Image (cartoon, rainbow, N blue to C red; front, side):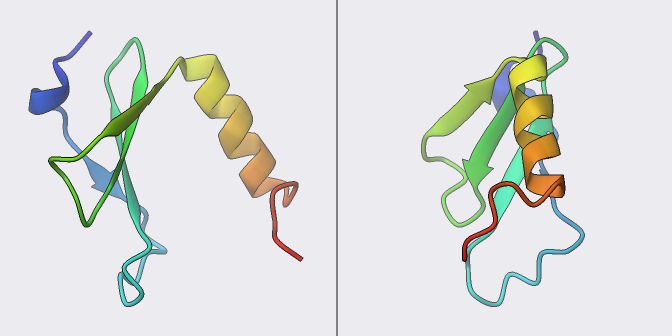
Length: 67
């Protein structure tokens, strides 16, 4: 697995960063890391690839939309 400090972080192309509510994601090969773009040195969440894919699929499908 790629060390988290050497990760290449990506921000969503849909992110405008005007409200400061952005996350960044890094593919670590054996895992996916997520961090707050405003606090890059802060805590990170680490997901197994299958868990990340399931989460992303639910977002894309609208399952997690707020009403």
